[in-house]
Length: 221
Image 1: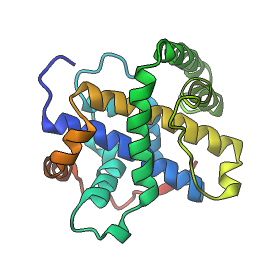
Image 2: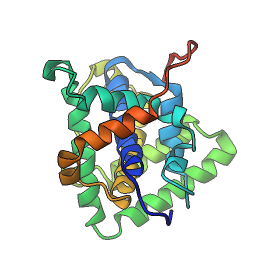
Image 3: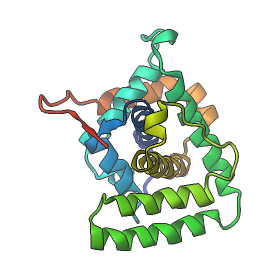
C-alpha cells in the first residue's frame, strides 16, 4: 500500500479492530459468531502486500459489516451510554494499547510471523479454517503476545471460555485484532486522532454500511 491514506482507510482499519472485538464478545458469551466476519478476520492474518486497506479484509465491504455495525453502535452519539457494550469498547482499547507495546518489544512480530507461516502451511494440508490451523494461530498469540501488558482479560460464560476450540478461536481472533491495530497505525490512525475525529470515522463507517441480506445468519464457532 503506497497511496496516500484517507479517512476511509483509517475507518476500515478501525472497523477491523471493532469486528474482532465484537466476535470475541460473541464467542465468549454465546459460543457463536458471524461466519463471514470470522473468516475475514482469520484470512487477514495471511494477507501479504495488500493493494489497499480493504484488500486486507478480502476486498469486499460485505466482509466487514459486523465491524461497521459495531463501530456505529459503539461510537454513535444517537446511542445512549447504557446501550453501548463496555466489553467491546474495552477489547478495542486494549488491542490498541497492546499492539503499541508489542511493536516496542524487539523480535515479537518476527516470532509471530514464523508461527503464522506454519499455520499457512497447515492450511494447504487441512483447510483454511481447520481447528489445527486455528490452534497454531492461538499459540502464536498465547506464546508471544499474551505475556505483554496489558493482558486482555476476556469475560464470558465459563463453559464457552473453557471449551478448547472456542478458546483457540478467541486467541486467533485477538491476533487478528493486533493485525488490524497494526494496519490502523500504518494508515495514520491514533487514539488521539480518534478522539478528535470521531465524526469523520462515523461518516466513513456510514458510507461503508450495507443493508444486510435476508439470508444472513450467525453460525456456531
